[in-house]
Image (cartoon, rainbow, N blue to C red):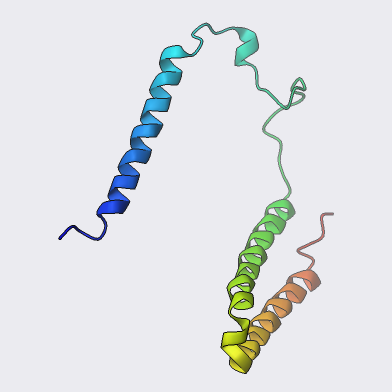
Length: 118
């Protein structure tokens, strides 16, 4: 009897072979001449301006982290919506508690000023 993870190992093996072969083809067929123009940073067709090492406000990172946290929590609504009828009243109460905790957390970070840019 074959090991249960054998198909997964075969998929990873094929994926690795495809990645390595594409890298090899790009290395063999790709252009080899470098120039100062090719070495410049590319910003959507615009010439770069200023220093790339500017300081961002901590608020920027805080808003980004909060977005990720709330976005990941909202993903849990999809399986619940699919199984809503099967879960019945118990599922409705559980999701109500989950959403209440989510809203309380959102109001908390809003009142703390974590969502303000300035």
